[in-house]
Amino acid sequence: MKAIPAIVYCAECMDTTRGKTAHGLIRFTERFDVVAVVDHVFAGKDAGAFLDGIPNGIPIVATLTEALDRLPGGKGAFVVGLATDGGVLPAHARVAVARAISHGLDVYSGLHVFLSEDEELSKLAGLHGVTLFDVRKPPHRNELHFYEGKVNEVQSVRVLVLGTDSASGKRTTAWVLRNALKTKGYSAELIGTGQTAWMQGARFGIRLDSLVNDFVAGEIEHVVRKAWHEAAPDVVVVEGQGALLHPAYPGGLELVAAVQPDIILLQDVPARKTFDGFEHLPMPPMSRQIQALEILSNRSVAAISVNPKGLTAEESAHICSAYEAEFNLPVVDVFKEGCDRLIKLIEPHLRTRQAIK
Image (cartoon, rainbow, N blue to C red):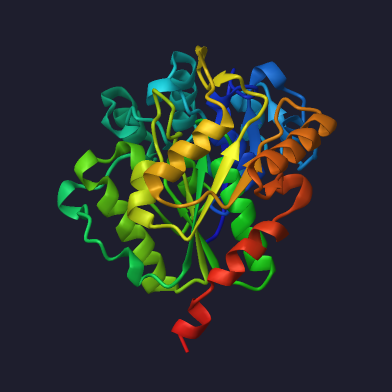
């Protein structure tokens, strides 16, 4: 896959979870070569340093004009890096999309509002010979798959990364683990379940939250089986969506049921006291989150991964130690510690090396 030079639009959202698509592309993408991020609020900063304290050479600029100067030959893509509530296109983003089209850039959007079905934007795209890619647009129903109960034919170790909240870092942890497995010499594939994973270059994936409910389990099962039949990886790492107890974005049960995971990792953001986007709804305690997941899945949580956002290094270390003592589980901050302890949990389940001999 040759990376496409791209401008990522994240105006007014860089410091919120609504910018998580942009955040993912800033941290890692094989599909795009991100040359700039547009957000007038934080213009002048390095995007990597802003997110994680580690400069990566991607500048945050105030305007599309500044970003265009960084595209080689002025050619490339414009990516809507927003993940708004309800997947709507804000007015300021619509103006930016129209300007990008006028400059001859293909536009990629992961919102629920489909740009290709917008009469005005579609007409403008036709005039300028560009393509509007709606990443979240579901397949036609005759292309969807119904659940067959055949996922256990997959000999890859099936690792499922779930979360205690939406926008908790599940996808990022899944990518870090997938890359760590490959560094260790194992073949591994990430199974993306949202629009951002596709934009980051996941070879296998679905956009779970835009599917007709009857086909959700079947599509999950199908993509896991597809990864096995086409790549036969030692490990598949499946990105979770939402959170089991989140009232607006409930997710996890359909993934547990369809993936039949060997390993469940539970991602937490300890600094959050309420659900993402709902400040009046208190976050259930970790003990209840684990109990609910284990009862419904009939599986044990194998480890907890911690997103330290909002914590000092000392606070994060203290919480990790407290969780380990309370739940008798490995508790890992993959950015600080790496994935060695998680990989040790996976290795006893490896069966591909015998299966493909």
